Structures are given as C-alpha cells and as structure tokens.
Length: 176
Ligand SMILES: [Zn+2]
Image (cartoon, rainbow, N blue to C red; front, top):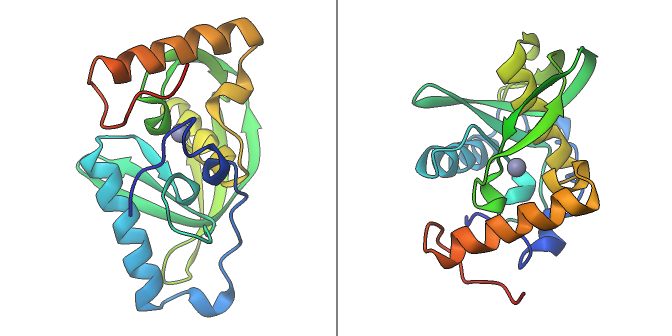
C-alpha cells in the first residue's frame, strides 16, 4: 500500500469508506489490512491514518491511531458524543504534515469494533479527540482543507507545495 497525497490523489482521498461487514471480523485479511495501515502509520511517524489515505480500493471503515511506537486499529468507528472545543496545530500525512492551527473537539467518545469484532467504547482526551475526529472525517471523504476558509486554505496549500519542493516529502511537486 502507498500513502495518498493531495492534490494528485484527490479522487481517492475523497472516497467514502465502506462499513466492514460482519463476516470481515476475525479474518486474516482484515488483520493484514489493519497491520499494513499500522505499518504505514509508523513508517511515516504519523499520529493517525485512515483507510481512505492509501491506494487500496475499496476503502473500508478502519483507522489506525498511534500509541507510542505501536498503534491501535478502530474498525467501523462512530463518534457518539463530543464536548467543548480546543485550538491547536494539526497536520495530515496527505498534506506533507504541515502544521496548521485549527479547532477540534476537546473530548469525545468513540464506539468501534476491534479487528476480532469486540465492541469497544473509549473516551478520548484533548489530543486523542483531535486525532480521532480527523481520521473519522477521512473515512467520510472530508479533508483538513475543508475545515479552512478560502484564504487559510490557499496559504496552507502554498506551504504544503513548498515543503514538497524542498524535498521534505516523497512526492513530486504538483502543478501550481
Ligand atoms: Zn489526515
């Protein structure tokens, strides 16, 4: 699997992921799919990665979240409640990890299934909430730039393309 980059992979990044069917849980193919996402997350030193960010089609509703040097996989994640708002810088692997100040929930509760199908519900604090909200947006085809006004988006994309030209990222420079 390869990490997708904006704007060259915009069509795939805009996909809406499909819910994992009951028959997928506990299978080797789901374990391999999740571990491949986890491997990419660790290799790119990200905080989270969603299945819509890799070149595997169709994309299933699964995100991986970094936990130290390891990760956890959340299948069919559903945000059941959010609270408050916090401002902090946030980046996205598909946008050269350029940090940008953005609001996000200060906390949230997420319900999901493990790769083995176990039902879990977890309350996330400030950093976890930002990360989970970002990744669940990805599963719905929503990107970090959709949360910006037009001016902020232009400045942000300028920084993304400059960082790639400077060779800090492993992709070609998109046409500007
Ligand atoms: Zn992202």
